[in-house]
Length: 126
Image 1 (cartoon, rainbow, N blue to C red):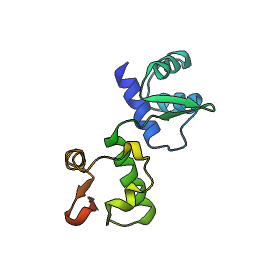
Image 2: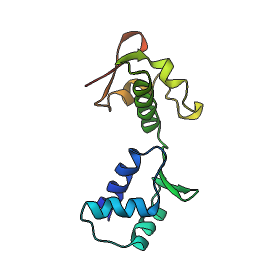
Image 3: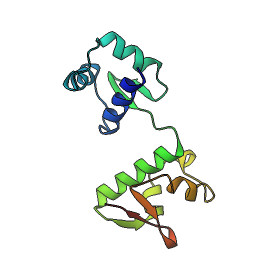
Image 4: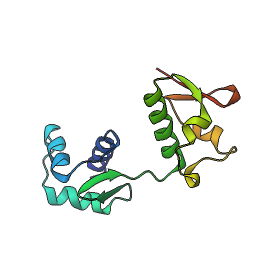
C-alpha cells in the first residue's frame, strides 16, 4: 500500500495542475497495478501528502525542504539558467515556508540536483 501511495505522489509531483482520479487510475493501470478506484481514493483520502481540490488531486507541499526544491526547480526551468541568485527563487515562495539562514545549509545538502554556492548563488547540477 505504501508503494501505491509513493507511485501516486511521484506521478502528481510531475503534474503541477494535479490529476483526476481516472487519470491516476490510468497511470497505475499502465504500470500493471491492479486495484479499483475505491481503493485508490481511500489511500489518497488517508494520505497527509495529498489533497483534492475541484476534482483534481494534488501533492501537498508542506515542508520547507519540499517547498524550496520546488521553488528552485520552477525558477531554474522558467529562466533556463543553471546558476542564479537564491533570492530570486525564494521571491515566489510563501514567507512561512522560506527557510531561515540557519536552516538553509542543512536543507540544501539534502538536494542532489541543486548546490548552494558562495554569495547565495545556486547551481543546478546536470
